[in-house]
Image (cartoon, rainbow, N blue to C red; front, side, top):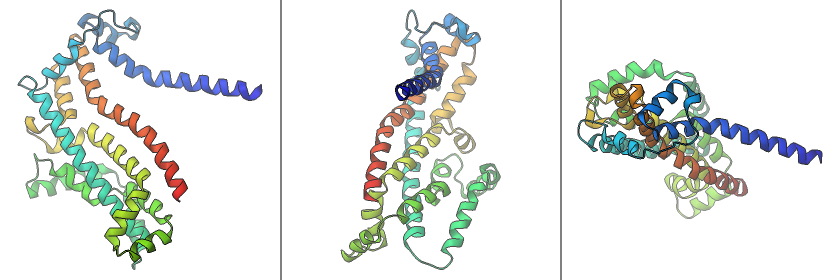
Length: 287
């Protein structure tokens, strides 16, 4: 009986926590579907917001997306395409570069490997604000400002945290699998591509999801390097929309556009949640 009661208490606390965490998202959804008067009142006082909109204004979402940019629909579609391109290239480059470096640190033997690994870990303590100005000066000298290159090229050099994850996972792979691949004629690249990456699916998924969320929502990087309106990402477009339609009479449009921007991250989280569990389970069995 005590165990049953403890389970009910835990479930109740988890349900309460879920409600508290989801309430801001639900609040944004309701405000985005309200009339201008009700949305403005709900922004000033949360108590003025009803849990369900009396007359959902689905048109708010369409009007918000059409209001981005100077040409109808063109601004939103350009920002969406730019965000997809930058995110896809960055995620791909991060996964490939981090897995390669992790494999080199885990499965190869060379002088100074431990020292290089320690230096790499030490870079995690370096705030990104310290390197922001030097990197901008370098990219300006290369003529890459107002292009997506400064946002994508650094991903080719890896991320210390993700390299650490790949290195720790690959170091636990049995040597027998590596030797079998080498007997089949695989070199280091063959072992990395055909053996290590399939076994590292949990780490690949975690790296891809975390990188996607960070790059998709990144505001500072595009703000520094992308100056043309046709090259702006969704984060920049959302900020410009906020500056143009930031009053209480337009808050429903701001919430609608914010939710549209969040939808890919929400869908990715729902999909990745199951993949994480399955991937970790398979990795544990294979390990």
